[in-house]
Length: 181
View 1 (cartoon, rainbow, N blue to C red):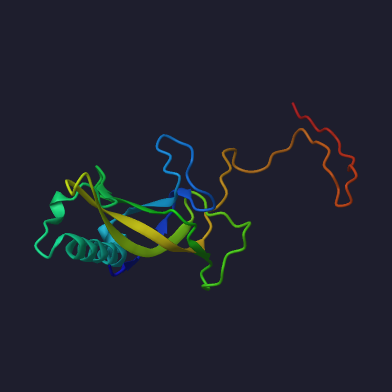
View 2 (view 1 turned 135 degrees about the vertical axis):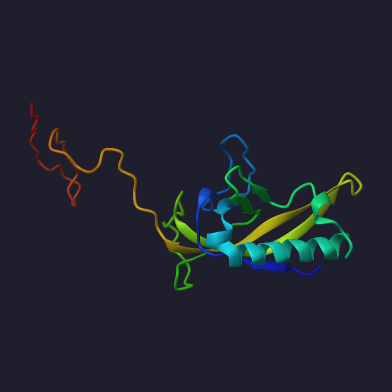
């Protein structure tokens, strides 16, 4: 079978498990995965690329007259607000790149809200003697475009309690306590 490749536009990573497989949460898959919420207005090219890969994989696996509406799963679900929720996954860790196409250092972890692109291929499957048929969007590469800003629920640093921290040589720096009333 041919690999029916796709490449997405930039999207915000949702539920990323790209540094290690998803093994916790409500639906742990044990796979490397990331979800995209895509809209026609912002992700038209990526949606078209994914859709073409799904159609080509389904037609190759199930025949040229196959009705895509009869698939049990395509990795895409429409949300109440009209966006598309797209799940990309793989048994193996995808290649991780920066915007310059160089490999990311191992300590860079893609987190929720980071701007990324995904590339991979659509893989057709069937089970239960062909009664259940679907497409999985297999992830091969992730390109990190921009890290999301760190969250600060408190709005930045404040004056107040200070604590001791280790200095660069392993000693303890003296600090003062400044409690304001």
